[in-house]
Image (spheres, rainbow, N blue to C red):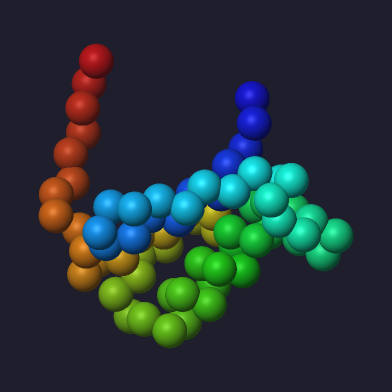
Length: 69
């Protein structure tokens, strides 16, 4: 399984990055995500941290659902 760094914007566009797309000499893919989320959460009080690699903007949440399949 490959890891991807996915950044989703309010207009539903996505940027998807693989390790080959980023300079991983200083940070791993998860390291890049962690740094981005850290800076984002410090810049806005409306960011909810799920963990070091996942966060959401509470300003942009339309719905929250649990789907059981």
